[in-house]
Amino acid sequence: MKVDLSAQAKALPVDDQIALAEAIWDAIVDSDAVPPATPAQQEELERRRRDPSQLTP
Image 1 (cartoon, one colour):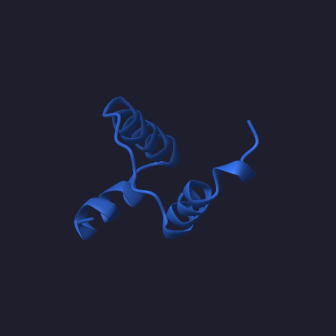
Image 2 (cartoon, rainbow, N blue to C red; image 1 turned 180 degrees about the horizontal axis):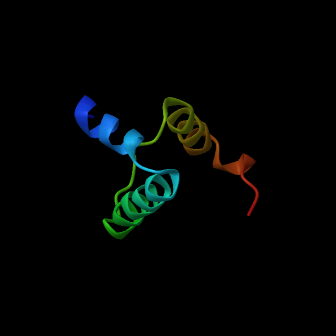
Image 3 (tube, rainbow, N blue to C red; image 1 turned 120 degrees about the vertical axis):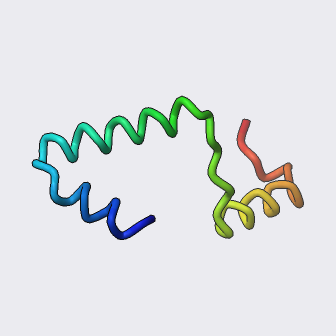
């Protein structure tokens, strides 16, 4: 993130910071972006693939 953008956001009144954060979050949700799995999530997926009999339906 650019430092000047962060500084500008921090300089806003709290109500405006909250509105900005909500607008950014809504834009992320609307983009249907899917973050990559974490290493722990990848490990759990691999564990489940190796032994599907241990899964609960």
